[in-house]
Length: 403
Length: 88
Image (cartoon, rainbow over all chains, first blue to last red; front, side):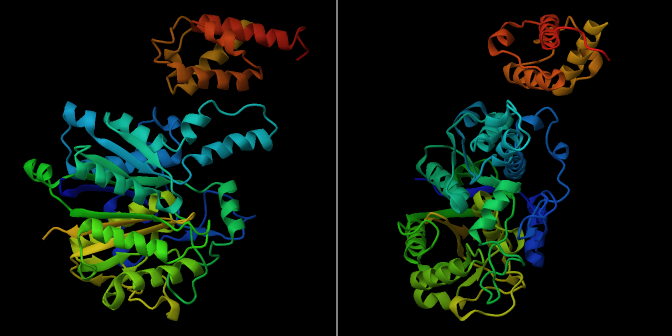
């Protein structure tokens, strides 16, 4: 069993096209939620989301590669490249042959699929573009990362809705810890802005027409986001031997299924996932100083998550700082867990906890210390990052600061 | 010179699809020399169908070895679509 550290992170999000921009916006408490520009929203009841503005693929990717990648796969490659550069990975044939790539995505390239189906159903065309399948398959992100960097080890994609990338990072962590892979690139990517997808969310009546106000009495639902984040994981001893700079240690992963309802959460499943992550990490609840909450700002999630945290931590819940960064980067579905893992990692590294933005007034049903609106300086020993998916599938990651 | 026109249009479709300079795509270029792989061929067939409003049969498409044969095949399909040359 190896101790596993994160040696590199990469992000592309509405808050910034790299990790530095993402983190600066989080610390400033800036929300990237604005009116949607990439889709005509005149016929949609909600208008706001966290979109990556002024995204020009040619600024990030070789022109010859762009037609072969849906937007979600482009984001995956861009964030993986930053993470690999950040870690200063020195590739050897052996390392390339054995490194794992595990990505999460809820929708994959469904935006590309819609373009094809639009031609069939709307324009009465009798054919769709020949790249519809290779662009839309959910593993395209992982495949393109492998192709771009010549990585030939175990590679696959996990799709567990809003917990996809937390599950992906957890699996990668366990593979590196057990020695099954000497290194892993793990995270998630999502590009959910296309008409049919937005209509489907509209029909579920969980999207705010306002903004994302997690744990606030005025909360009115979630707000979608897009982007990607990737981590480089490797054994502590390998990182130190090659002179790499460990950012944090990844120490625990817990999973559970509610086995209750396809959309309504209950507190027991999330609580079990948090307890399992603590046990996997061999951490006492009192060692956790911060939780990056799932915090979607739906009526159900925030109340249930508060109850789950209270049931897991007991009296220590009073001393915990909890925030939902979805208030700023939106709910990026399959990329959410990875974006929030990066927020958690930076929090431990820099001793600053990002706030829950857009907060107005407290809800008695969500009575934790949720770091309203302003980032807080706090040196925290360890933290959790919560991801609870529709379908009741929960994934919790635990990170520990490097002393 | 309808053949000349069709050839020009085919070369342009290939250049656009593969993002190559138009002058580098010539009637005697091989697919290999242009770096056109099996997936690129699918893209080009798709774009040719749009350009000429034709349907290219899978089996016939497989036998096409070079641009010259491609132009011949397209010409044949375009002529089959309009048996008598219609008035401009």
